[in-house]
Image (cartoon, rainbow, N blue to C red; front, top):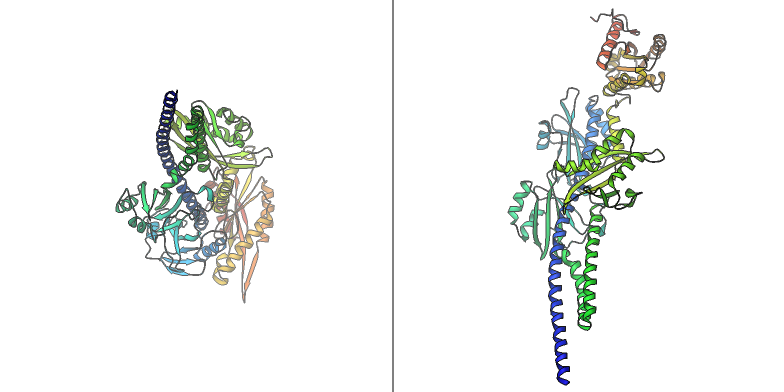
Length: 624
């Protein structure tokens, strides 16, 4: 009996030892596989993070560039003199993010809004602009005025003939350039740096304690670090604009770094992640679970098997949760997203607001059709269906288009309109075709675009429509419903008599006041829906909507009386009057040029016969 008990004891002990050893081997192998998988997941995430980091920088730069382009467009219209251009920049500077704005003249002299004047004739980026480059964003440098670290955005300002008249010059301080200021601390496990091609730091993201040593330049850090790639080789790849993935050791700590070149400027985004962070979560989990698990296996074999099964199930749930957390991090800062299986036409995941009323697992096509009926204006429904449907996204992927952005308006139940941007990324995943649709509200961006477009069509001195705005208004009138119903409109071309004497004897300031006074009289004299324009110089146009010939004569007779103006400076007085030529729309032309030519012919006849009067175009007018 004693021998039997002893044998059973040894047998059970041996079995328990075998189970213990097998458990250790299985868990060790499992740990290695988890670390390897986590490493691969984090490498993939690092690449996606780096691409998102680069997008943040590029969109910030695009915002500055868009602002500069809007300012340049306004300055190009009407080709104002340098003094007028600087006055406009000073009025606009207060609402911009730039440290300083200015105009560079043809001699390379910068006239800044803060009153400074700097010789920039030796700067290479000015020559690039003169060689027809649409814009230049410089590398970082020390300001000649303040000594602060800055970079410059330069854009040409063209004259009436398309020649470069000035170069618009905007200065941005590096300390104000913060594209990552909205990254939440708990989301920013990575360390972000932006550098130029010479290795100088543009900015660094300090929202995390990375433990990375601080260096004067990125290249200095490379040379003092070690890794799987030589520092000289990395610097050569940076100059060649290549994407780089490398492992580096800084101050005894291992990092994985992904270097992504920007498309908009000669800068790089460097995204770093501590290598220890990759396996930290796995090690913490195993350290807190493995020993209790072994005790359960030794105590009760059945319980040990149950614990192993529970453990494996929990790991599967952990992996799914990790994927969800990763997706939430990638989509942080957006208004909503949908993940769509294009093969089965099913919504796999998404934000609750976007999936209403169907929910997860519903048909994406069915949801899109509901949006068309309830949100999308009728004139945009064909566009959204042809770009955002399952068939459209599948066809795009077959053509090699894996990323696409669609912008469209939405109207809520109260009639309020907003603008949405949908960025679609399509990937193959385990024989499935998955679309990741990211939705953002871009109403503010669209409002700014419309504002800049309106400013580009207005005369900066009088606030009236300029030549470009006038031409668009004429084309709209020719295509309008009222025009198709046979209504007539008057195109009145006005020219001031004796205006040159005002500038010559009283100065250009008084001349500007005359133009502003005339603009005010014209706006007061005509109806709100009539169109008043200044084409340039002392030439004005009024488009009188839906008016009879006799009413035109009455209206213009009273206008010319109001435009008898006298201006006095000291002992000198100068009087001005106005002459007008009228063309009828559509009787005298089917486009702006033809109508303008007929009105100009009538105006010439008035000028030849004593001025201060008006004529409606007749075929017997002969322009000498």
